[in-house]
Length: 131
Image (tube, rainbow, N blue to C red; front, side, top):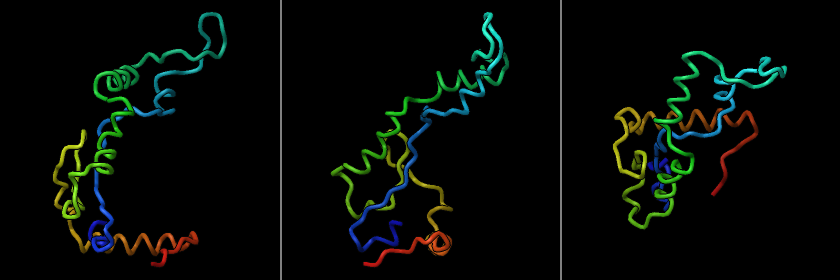
């Protein structure tokens, strides 16, 4: 997008917010199950398996709270340090400038993807806006 909109004044960035612990109902279903417990039928109780234990450890020791995932996009949106020449920059978690993989820096491939996506969304009645 940075290449497509370089003349418009719009800055475009790619970013990785990090390993963020967001609300995931699948997670709850993986570590809890409905079964009779404590004399009450159909109560949510912890599953007893290694997969549940690993998921709990991952959420406890590896993942960060959801609000921390906003640091990188907030920096990219509000920083006065970023100028027009920085458009297209990649940011690692915690608003650190990084370098995207070589494959995603291919402008010709990006233009092909853009054209494909524009053509694909036309079937939903979404058309590109006019200037």
